[in-house]
Length: 455
Image (cartoon, rainbow, N blue to C red):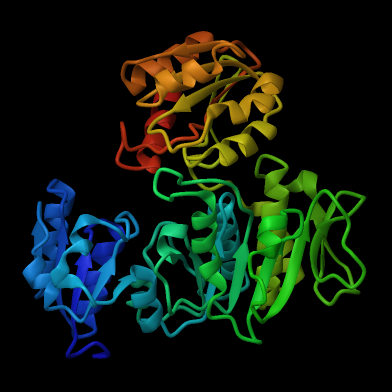
């Protein structure tokens, strides 16, 4: 395949998405220059792989002269659009595109796009699980696991790609156009990168920018901002709701009065799936996630019976309310993916034990006092840690017992074990990014699980 022959493509960032974009561009015949300001073993290895494949690559620097010769620059989601290198006069006028746009243009399979502040990883994993069970080759990718560019490289291509998309990935997108789009919910997040919450929501709204009359949208009926975000975008809308019953003629899914998850895709005929108590994922919020995924899977061709069996067999993805150990009557739960207050709030609402809450990491701009209603109700003690530890303690200490542990993550987990009593839960739901101690939330969650098995 040579769809990019004649192009010279720049790639900024050599983590998972950037490396995948470089691989895709090279495989399609483009010249590639890739660079990452970070000079560590992982970026050096990625740069060497690109050189072996015929591209150019630098670490520890961006060569503006080489970037200026590119026809477009592919931006990894970890690099903000206003990064210093992109403000260089020599790069003015060169299109800057996200990795998902490059990949979407090279992907022959239809796409289901899943976004939202919380729940998108679970919904994406559920959807892939349902569709695979229905006999479709439906890998998940994007912001979860495999970069979309890697899916575009598959030969033969998948039947359908289930893609989790973050606001960072959507922010510059012009071409990404899912056949089915899911918006789980909206809440403030990433205020360390965005000037305000409206700018964050505006990037989420780019999910709908290429909508057509054939588009299908799955929206949260009980989140007013999420329900309204598509504006006047064309396409059919399907709503999911848990705490209320559907309006007459409404299409979508709901929790029936008898506790059964139920689909009503034509606005009239009900398709009961299973009782909520049969789900193997924790928390009331996961009922909403299950409904959103079930609607999208049904729209993509999965039978109701297949979805029901998939709901029975599905387990929580790693790092999202994932039980990882139970020792001495204490349940250890890894919710490392909770990198904002809204996600931690959801986790706390799902707790049915007295909880020792591990809260901290790199601060993202929201006051931790927003968690107080749930903390007062469910949390016996907060263990504050990381760069945000002092701030967590300062904001919460007058309202709840807080211990600030300024040492290593091992020290943090050991102190939590000392504070926990039989019947308690120790919950890592940090409401912060991981970058003060770990390269990503996955590594933070893996280390927590390892330590939980040892203490």
